[in-house]
Image (cartoon, rainbow over all chains, first blue to last red; front, side):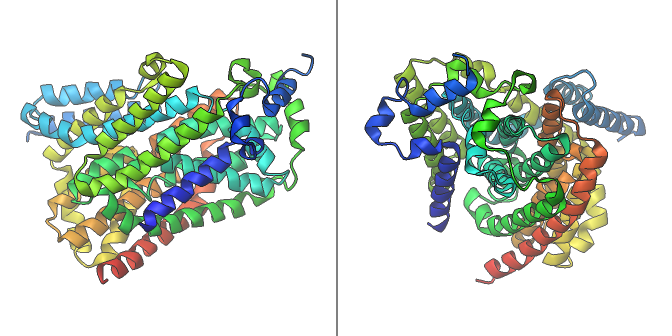
Amino acid sequence: MLFTLFIISQGYLLYKLVMPIENQTKSRSQELSYSSNNQINVYMKKVADPHA
Amino acid sequence: MLDSSLFLTITIFTTTIFLIMWNPWRLNETIPTSIGALLFILLGIVHVSDLFDIFFMVSGASITILSTIVMSIILESIGFFNWVAYNLVQRSNQSGIKLFIYINLLCYLMTLFINNDGSILITTPIIIKTLNMLQLKNHQKIAFLLPGALTATASSAPIAISNIANLIALKIVGLDINSYVNLMFVPSMIGIISIVLLLFLFYEKDIPKKLPPVYFTAMNYNKASRIVPHPLANKQHLEVDWWMFKVCISVVIVTRLAFFILAPMGVPIEWVAIAGALVLIIIRWHRNKTGLKDVIAKTPWHILLFAFSMYILIFGMQNIGLTSLIVRYIQGIIEAGHLHSIFTMGFLLTGMSNIFNNLPAIMVGTLTLTEMQLDQHLLQVSYLASILGSDIGALLTPIGTLATLLWMYILKENGITISWKHYVKATIAVIPIGLVISLLSLYFWTEWIFHL
């Protein structure tokens, strides 16, 4: 039981580490419209190609 | 056995190990191993009748590892890892120490949820991307990369399913994944934490106190430094399905939990692993209509043949008396008590792993222990000490584990140089202390558990 809780806590830690900070605070409805209006995507597109 | 036959067996074995470790023609490690195993069978060193037993011994572990690799391929295909480099920089909030902690945490978690080789394959390019974004100097990059690699490899000790070698040997000594965790988790975690702390002290002067701001670093991530293509430069991967992201990470965690919950009910771990991989494949197909093409192409199916061939080679060495020779020298010390056996096996496996790699070493070590007719507790603590030797002690040189060899190769491909001298200078300062702490922790922990 203790180990089960430990694995869950480690899984949560992995989730926090790989999930962008911005997305962790988004609501579910915002998440579902993930692509075109995702703020991070727009921001990162600018970073990847500043002249676009 | 005739002397010429003995000579031939040793020559085939050493040549095979040499080809795996030094890989002069960039061969897949399965090729020399399979040729060596085939020669052993043709020369009658290993009998055809033994092959079924060997296959049964290695197949479950190999299928489990293959299934976790399939899961990581699915995660990669949905862009799971593409954001990590950016997140690491952002989360560290311009602190080099925080970045050091997050990198080691990522390496540990990836080994915990995937496996040691998978962790090295996935996290090393992510760390390189992160460090390239920050435009650090070579010696500063090493201060993050080497601790990450050592943490990823050492982290395969706490749970048996993170390493194929541990998993194969588990069945032979009469342990299951839950009893392994009960006995091994605490001592190996103490060892890993000690190693990370020692690595931090060793590299403290090379870790920049303040990192450049994330927006600045991302903007300055120029094409010249993109030896590894930055994930953000790939427009195809810019759009990540966050729903899939969350569902898939949940499946990975639930699968890991299922190993421990279902094993006591008699469900073979490879079935759980296959089920986890299938669930991810089905979810991806349902959401994206993506088939199995990439999974089939990217999965290293040869692992099954590699483990099978390697075990044939070890069986052959056992048949010519290698394990009996070791038994003759160490049986007296092993039987002197738990503390003696723990340190003897820990150091023996460290030595063997650094001479001929930890996968064959742990196989030799386990077969040696089973030949001694030890009582159950002594057999199990000796086996666990062997695991610490082969997972932690093996890190002394890059040839100790396939994961560190793989890591050296990835670094070279990405233009980051680390000499053997530098590697050993760092590991010699850290690994022996970490190993002794782990072995002592194993002794005190198992004594306490056995007397409960």
